[in-house]
Image (cartoon, rainbow, N blue to C red; front, side):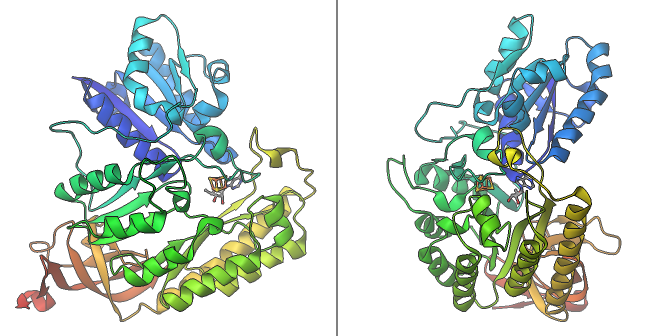
Length: 463
Ligand code: 5AD
Ligand code: SF4
């Protein structure tokens, strides 16, 4: 068999796209290798969300040149958002590239690779698919599909929000949802192969089912349907947009036991003028009242967010509003960025008077505030027992396993290595908190509806 080396930059959508390409290529005779030097085909699945992501890819491309020079038969491809954004231009920037394929074309990876082989020159594919629906066809028979205990399932692709700073609507195209029946079929298959936690994935999952489906299913209804599939022990979703987050979705948190008490809800800024400039289509007050409603329905819900500081023209006091909002909501963690101008986005042309040093200072202050909130919230877990889905062995010294609690904190813990397996749900007593991570000791194992105590290595089975 031929070998393919796949590397992924960027978000979970890209990780899912890479997995899909691996599966498609497997069925055309390629196995995945971890060694670039052994590969017949190298695919770099790229990201262009911020300038830094883009720079990383160009510097990796520089490192790939000697491989291509040494082996002219090697096929070198760039897929994903940078490929979509740059198209033919990428051939000028990286002249030794053979294949440029946008994210909407990954389903055609095999045909595009074949085209490269049959042609004496590079192939560029950046057109969007013309299908009305988003469908991920299934393969009959055996596939190299070995999901981890926690696995992502795409439910919607693209984004129609057009925030003024963001490349995604340009690189991933319009929102398209998958039929609920197809999603349920995939979840059943994943569960039969060992998945326990399902994370419904999309750029804006709350827009799921808004149009185009043969059978209209709103997002909250999809939550109920997936939660009802036997073997799904925990359910999450990401990413949400505040504008599309409905009361029915809040009700789902109350109704569905296995829907984890965590919500990632990007707010980007706490200032209304900046939110308007960003075209987020909601105010800071609306965001806070949504959060208050959720907190009153689900009192111990953990919240995380995305923040951009130093937007073009952001004043000191507008930035301070973001800090006020972060403190008010009490996020357990945040992804924080300084604004990065992106090609083809409206914000790129906004006049920007904020010096880079001020942007960096603002980012530092935001990080410090979030670190304090994370520390304070972590203390609430100290001495508590939390439910952890075991995802695998821990790389941390002194810990055996790693997983996450429902609030999406990462947990490293010690436990009986003869009894605990990935995919188990264990109770872990938390002994230490550091950053957004907890450490502890497994005290009980829940498997097949039975709870086994693990204290002092003496298993006691309870009802
Ligand atoms: N500059 C900085 N951050 C950005 N993000 C998206 N585009 C930009 C940009 N141009 C951030 C947003 C988004 C997250 C995925 O990346 O916070 O929610
Ligand atoms: Fe980008 Fe806004 Fe769509 Fe999120 S909602 S992917 S930030 S355009």
